[in-house]
Length: 131
Image (cartoon, rainbow, N blue to C red; front, side):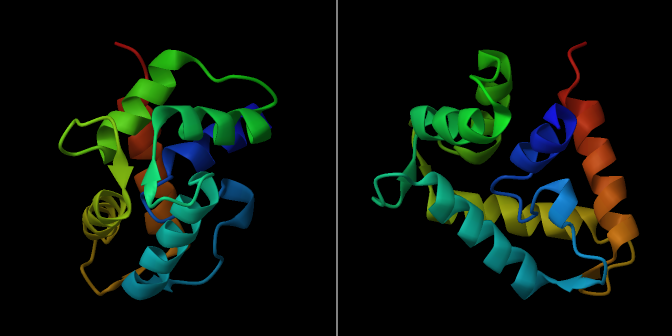
């Protein structure tokens, strides 16, 4: 369960649901971004259009069964908070999701297949491992 949740949280702001909810059919960029917006909204506890580290931590803890490691929160948050102001805005999350989609769309056909999504997630996991 922990591995699945980490995969889902690493995808926050990147347009993908938790692994258990991964689409079994190709997904368009528009649908990918819609999923990203829904993930952002779910984490934005006070509905102010901003996700803070505290909100990210609380959202992860709810599904994770306890507070996640601070280093994991820092890495995820830094990937979204592009200007480093301590606030992840919806625009920053969408920009991150759009860039991730483009990176993962290996054949550049405007859709992500389940295989492209899995390959992208594996690359993200590998990049997240401590050196």
